[in-house]
Amino acid sequence: MDAIQTDGLTRLYGSLTAVDGVTLAVQHGEVFGVLGPNGAGKTTMVRLLNGVLAPSMGACRVLGLDPKTQGGEVRRRTGVLTESPALYERMSARENLRFFGTMYGVPVEKLSSRADAMLDDFGLAERADDKVGGFSKGMKQRLALARALLHEPEVLFLDEPTAALDPEAARRVTELIMEFTRQAGRTVFLCTHYLPEAQRLCDRVAVLNRGRLIATGTLNELARTLWHGTWVDIECLAVLTPSLSDALRGMPGVTDARLDGMRLAVQVEGEEVIPAVVRAVVERGGQVLRVDPREHTLEDVYFELQGEPASQPAMVGGRP
Amino acid sequence: MNWRAVGALARKDLREVRMNKVAWIPAAIVPMVIVVLLPLAFILAPNLFAPATGTTNSAANVQTLISLVPPSMVNELHGLNDAQRWVVFSTGFVSAPMLLLLPLMFSSIAGADSFVGERERKTLEALLYTPASDGELFLGKVIGSVVPALLLTWLSFAVYAAVVNIAGWYIMHRVWFPTAAWWPLMLWVAPAIATLGMAAAVLISSRVSTFMEAYQLTGTLVIVVLALVVGQATGVLSLSVPVTFLVGAGLWAVDAVLVWLSVRLFSRGAAKALA
Image (cartoon, rainbow over the protein chains, first blue to last red):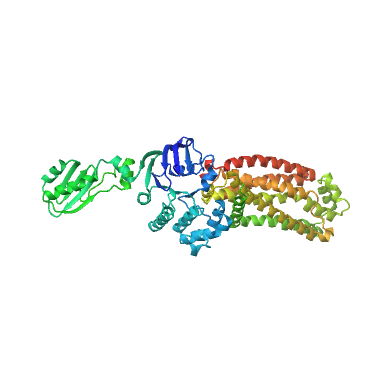
């Protein structure tokens, strides 16, 4: 059984469709990214999956439960980190954790020790009794992450967890997310528009646009559907003869080849063709210095899917 | 019902509102006036100034005022001299509705901080992601608003009783307060008024976005209490024991409707809760 399933999930706010017929499945232990610009419907998805909002149409299940009718049980087994830390600023870090631990049903006898352990793990032990209002944004977000994990949820929802943080604080939060999700084998549903973060953390991603799901898969799967073949950059020690590119174009599995002095850019149908291409270059006198198959980034995939012109992989030094 | 969560939420709300000085500084002044200064003025002023003016405490004026007293209270004034009648009339009869301002004020402040303040501080969403049901969240917030309001009201009432009896001792020569009508007023009407203030705060919270807006709007409820004050002072309405029970019943009926509406507004399904 999947950890999260949605089937035609739809949520309307008056005439606005925030989530539009989304169907997806998230496996247990998977870090699943939901990408999209502001207003794409990511936060509404989190609310729907936690039973905080009811779907207008369609259905969803989390850990086999229906959030609409079993919201309490769903929320007992999930943790949510929102973009804004949503902490009680007049209370101390320890008081915040104890309060939310009580709300999440952490047993009384475990509450103090677990709160203290989380404060320690998240580097907040020294400020445990200080009012949260005096914390930096990064500290607040770390505390909010500790709160989301305090009751040891099976599924963790992260809604733009680093959007409001400076790069250093964002990196620290991302490291903590990796540490506390990977080692525990938790299922993670990460909503973000910070693409390097998603690429670093996610096993698979879904791309939303105006509430609609436009693609789902691993980075490689998505790249394969978007671009036919892989570009390989080959750099040699001396200037290559122009006939080389014509020869390469005639090889099986090669779809394009472009020459620029000592550099070649060859488009192949699959990575298995690369050794034959290298061999052909060497046989024609090329002294190969470096072979670099280009990897598509999540950013390339994302902008291609969103229909924006950042997708075509640019070659260094004026290459295609 | 998860009473542990309900209790934790109520305690958290109480702690939060206690730290909201903007709310409590004005709220501390009004009880001081109503509970201490007002009875002292009623008891002491006529006797201090009567010799100079010769009118305030005159038998004629006292008789005019006492003509407003309901028949049920006439017995309480029987056998008293004019000064004693004035003390009983002013502090035991006219002031009664004034004390109802306190549960209204306390609960509407606490309610506004609990419901609107939580949203204003962007902490409500974290609460909605907990396993607590809508009913448990609502009940926790109601307890966090109404119970402290009532406890403060009853504490103020105790202080008022002490001030009235001590300051009036040289006139009354006995502990005479509270009179019978005050018990249903404090135990039946005050809880209804406190609930009214809380429910009004919840309803108003769906229309405003800041604590101060809600605080100011709930202030309009003072009209309800002022109506009782004016009614009592002019003799149109006399808060005798049966009338007090009736007024309380009417307020509880209004409360039932407002609380029903409040519960609907506070549910997770209400988009405003997340706005």
